[in-house]
Length: 327
Image 1 (cartoon, rainbow, N blue to C red):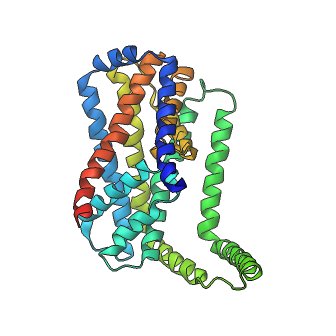
Image 2: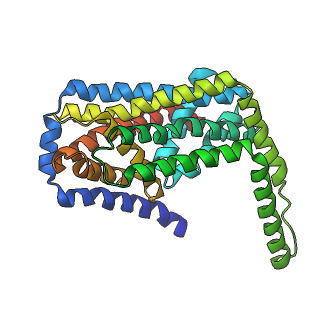
Image 3: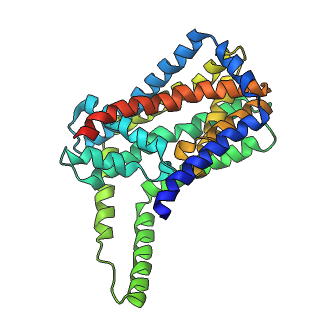
């Protein structure tokens, strides 16, 4: 019963969060702004998102190919789109859907799922860290008008993230040691409660996982191209917020747009599908409070941006998933 209620509660939470915006904004004013939007700029939003998807998808396919994926770029991009559907439609999906792409890529290609999982995680880092690096650059560029402390908190966040990644990769013995301690503790609890220890070969799985990372890191060209394409894809994901502003006749500096898109990543803590409701609320609030944009206009910009970067990708990913669903 509880399992059936979770999806309903998640969708309900998203609806309430989304509807909460219109408590403070007249929907007719928002629709009027959208109706008067420049269609040329609106079409550019979808073009930009298409380019961003191709650039980011390339990173995943390129790294998966290093661990044995031989499906080619076309099939790899299709699997990436399916993966995106899961990522954009499940609550807390940023923390758990990597296994979906790992499974899909290993199912027909005969590669170990641990290797595929390692490749997907590294690709996630290369694709999603630019949210914070480019967002930090945007905040710095726009620092003259942001609230006090924003620049410092952003710098601490980015620095902490980079430090954590460096420890996880360059000091792997730390991860091994933590994993061993957790395993020992779990076994002690199992022995005390149930009289038996876990028979899962966790250490071997971690070793297999790091083998894939070693194989990827050995190809500096692939890592460098992944970092480059990840940042390029993020540019095409951030700039559309500025373009959406032009579509309705307001100017949103690129630096502010980058900072807002970075801030929306924290909506992943909300139990709503793909952060729906939370992302919109954050964007509207920041456009009004920091960007000095009218509430109706800010809401229209947000809806246009989300239409091209979220709902459009769900639609395309859904089409890509049809052959898999049939098989």
